[in-house]
Length: 385
Image: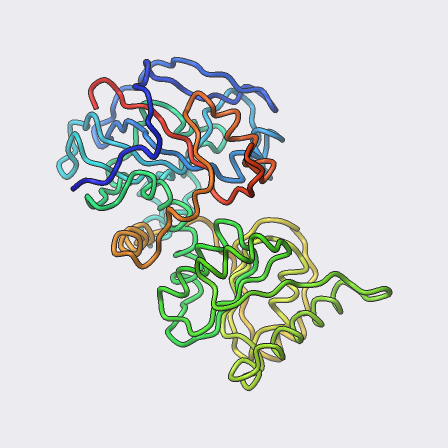
């Protein structure tokens, strides 16, 4: 039996409906022309799209770092759908295939691409990153190699979550090299932090401890993936930010005891907030030869206890999106039941209510007053789908 294509009853699409960001806080729906297919492309009728913080950031601020909105841009990049047409050179995809979209297509010719590091390709075309349009459309054309077929037992809602899950797989597995029976510390109980923690559990970590400031998020983390949680405390009077981070780290290690304390800290930290305090706490909480993966983008110039890291030979590496093999691992983890990604979805909206979906994501709460973890937009079936 094939899993559902939409998580809400969804009316059919009318033309190539597109959700377009014209300027800061100004969006419209447009019926745009359908782009012709290149020989190696497939045309996908997008059916499910998850909202990411970057989508909201572009809508609210018109830029992320050096990526600046200079012309109207379609939003969305966490998507899945059904192939409705294939290019003349495509031989391994068929009309009707259900696929998860990997939204960054590289040149496939430069040294980085040929070495398998295509996420760093300087010519990467990434959905909803200026100047390239995103996936909140009826029809999205994509190189066939980046339209990943999904098994029948996977819903298209779950398939759209392969994008954030691949971010987590890249951080925890490809870069963090998580191993069985390790002790893993995860900062942030948002979607990426939760999925990173879930990947660590799926790969056999002994402990996965989630750190956050919000009780509701910590409760969900404990239910979803964490062996335990920790709520860090703010600086005391006359206590520096660095001393506060050290105190929280030492308190956590002492609280856990056993092999965490015996080893002098954690084996691996996955930092998914971008907050300086979390990165500092990670540095203080690492054992000798421990590993830190920085995933979250926040403070661009954080202060860290570098002497501590040097003496203990703690490694710190950045993680950016995903790369070769990460989508395959993600699809396998979700389709075999190792990670129930759909549990992250707290709010669902029809495409016509995209403004409400973005507002809920930006607020962190839906109209029901409940905290948002992952918000989904359900898009309609195309006539030929």
